[in-house]
Amino acid sequence: MILSIEELSIAGRDRTIVDNVSLAVREGEFMALVGQSGSGKSLLSQSIGQLLPPNLHASGRILFEGNNLLERTPKEMRALRGSRISYIFQDYQGAFTPFRSIGGHFDEYQKVHGEKSAGVRKTKAAEALESVGLDAALLRRYPFQLSGGQLQRAAIATSLLLSPRLLIADEATTALDSVSGHRVLELLVAKQKETGCAILFITHDWRHVRRYANRLSVMKEGRIVESGGKHRILDHPQHEYTRNLIDAAPVLSRSLKSGLEEESL
Image (cartoon, rainbow, N blue to C red; front, top):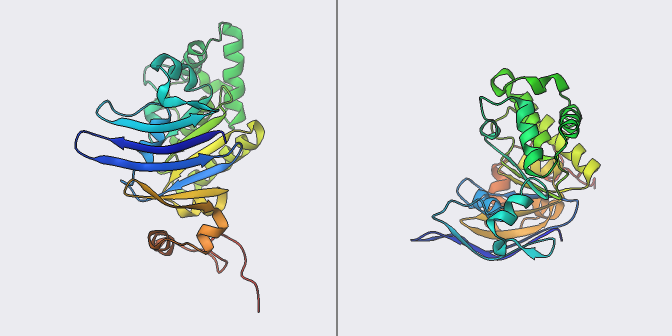
């Protein structure tokens, strides 16, 4: 396992928000974490990178490549984030400083993680943009000069720049229309095949789960209520909450929920 979350709880002063959750992500897989808003999905993803708000505390174990991330120092986590573990957030526009060019963001990102050669940084930035279908000339532009789709692609290029082993996509397509969201996920899957990274995909959109996930876990009120292979859960959900979520999702074909075809009698 590239990531193993064991008995993780996240609590504030008055209540426990994530309660004794265990979850595993295998190397190279597309793992979906599904649930309604407020179920604790995003807080769980933030705890992996020690990005929780200061009023919340995580306990348990989060093993990444065999090491417990909750025991890492802030300095050690800064070195891991962006290099071995990377994030794509719903608010991708917030990942860019308005007064810094796109190229400036890529340059700073690489300098923070130890690349000293300005020429190498420039070349890698151009290659990263081109790998997501953008022209390297956009490096000279500022965030407000890019469309939403271009900025989202630039955010993906940044997150994959240093070939992380784990990519955490937290509602990364929620702010996009269905066509743009599909293109972003196709791009993520293509980059995953290219780099071999694992993806932890936080979502409430069952269409994306059906199309892209290998395995999934369902989260309700801070707890995992069901985990397993995509086809098993979508076609034969065991928990009532999972059944209700699936039944409420739009179905666009007469095949099974997972996309498999019904066997003819």
